[in-house]
Image 1 (tube, helix red, strand yellow):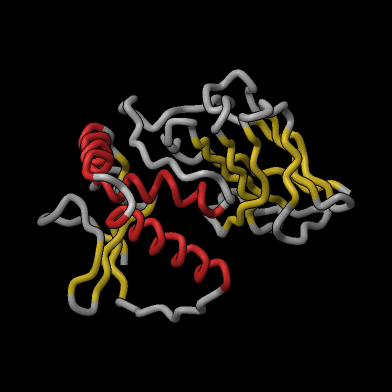
Image 2 (tube, helix red, strand yellow; image 1 turned 135 degrees about the vertical axis):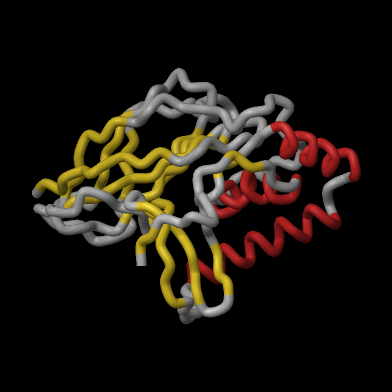
Length: 228
């Protein structure tokens, strides 16, 4: 149920049996439903990564390192689901920065960034996708600051959609990374993590992990039409 409220300007979360949220059309309420937990391999892997990072925060990082992450977190905002700028805790920023690095087998960054932002990268451009090769190709700017020793461009391929779909939020699976150790050379050829067929559309999600541990916001590239 979409509605305009005289009592609240924004709503997100559950109260009793109702859940409030919003989309491009405005705020809405729906009956609360507890989703099933499929417990996929990817979900299990990410839960283990987060548990390990939480343990490292408590048992491996020094008090000085935790203080530095708390300082970074106090200076750098993230956007919540309502689009508001918020500050999260130091451990949240530590996990946010390192979970993608752990997922892709890269070295963890224990020292907090001393540049108080998330970092940025030049928008990526799509080149194409092929059913024959099962490859999605995108171009990137090789002079971006993530493309230095220790930096990574993390690329995730999305589940293919029909040709009429114009918006895609997920799911994505990590498909490729460009290493700044080389440094990386554009374009990037991403093995699709889903079977793609001619006539479909695909999207790519990209994040830059900087050598100092900063993690950019996500870029979504698409729709990319799948050719033969």
